[in-house]
Amino acid sequence: MSVANVTVRRKPKEPIEKLIRRFRKSVDDIHLFQEIREREYFSKPSEKKRKKRARAAARRQKEARLEKKRLLQAKAKRDRRQKISQIDNRAAVETADRRTDAGRYQRS
Image (cartoon, rainbow, N blue to C red; front, side, top):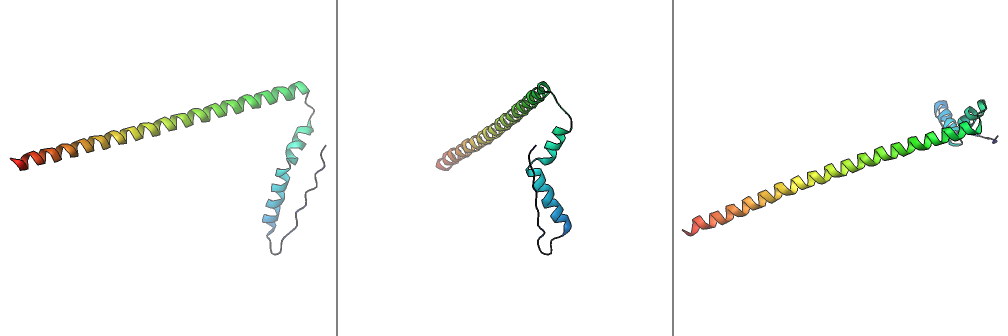
């Protein structure tokens, strides 16, 4: 069992709520409650391995889901850019056509 020595000193004119918040944060940082929860009941080594594998599988699934979401967002962004460039190209062609048509009519 690890030894936990959490000390939080009160600053001048610091509210108790803030002091308690700092204490809880320092306790969370050293994972004290997590260790207490793990040591509350005995778990077989095979159980620990099974839980570890399950956590790893869940993490991989989450990473795959996030990667798929990123790829879909990138594709949507690329599609939007293509649509905008197509619109810009059409506008440029129409403008060029108007200029050439205007030049034809003025020369006659």
